[in-house]
Image (tube, rainbow, N blue to C red):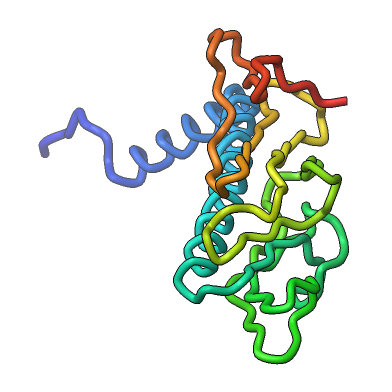
Length: 187
């Protein structure tokens, strides 16, 4: 009778499962932080895509388009972290009525935290004109995680021409800088 010196498939799977469990316990916070960073970045990408969509629709359809916070997916109300909508807004009243159409709905971001829009004239909506520019509303969206970690803060900067850009970490200290070059802080 021959004896095998290798592992059986069952033994190998058990060993791999134990190793995976040990790695998850020792590196769990690292993976959790990576996941959180990914969720935050995805949410900011969705915001940027919504602004790009709103701008393109305004130009293509030659109509005012509104991008606003929406907790119910139909009206401009609630908080930005509850979701948002993009819709044609021919009379610029920030209400979907008459021939206006809902173009897109963003669900609430996956990452827990606050999302604020700071704009010229302190309006909590963004309107894009048929020329693709904002309705005099340059500003920024800033995301701060619930734990207040400034390395996880993100900002989307919108200029008056309706273009959005992500804040960058130009000094490589792990914290993004706003449009004035100052570090983003979560209070």
